[in-house]
Length: 62
Image (cartoon, rainbow, N blue to C red; front, side, top):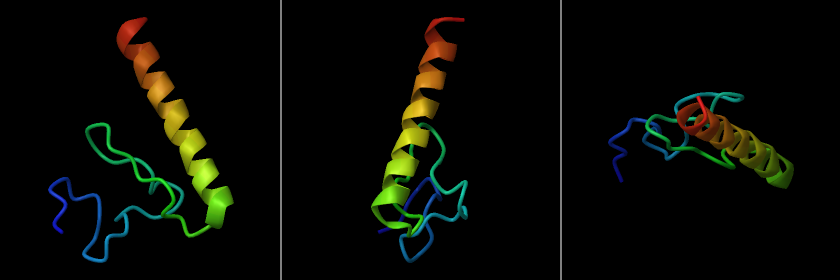
């Protein structure tokens, strides 16, 4: 399946390498692609949640 945002390569893996693999364009995120097991997934999820929180604060509270 083609990814129109260009986030993933032909193998379905994020084009960006660790540690910047989690953030795509236009509010899209990649979680769990670091190949670091459940700890990596949890780490990615925390970073994504923090980024979403920051974006909401910047959008609505500034």
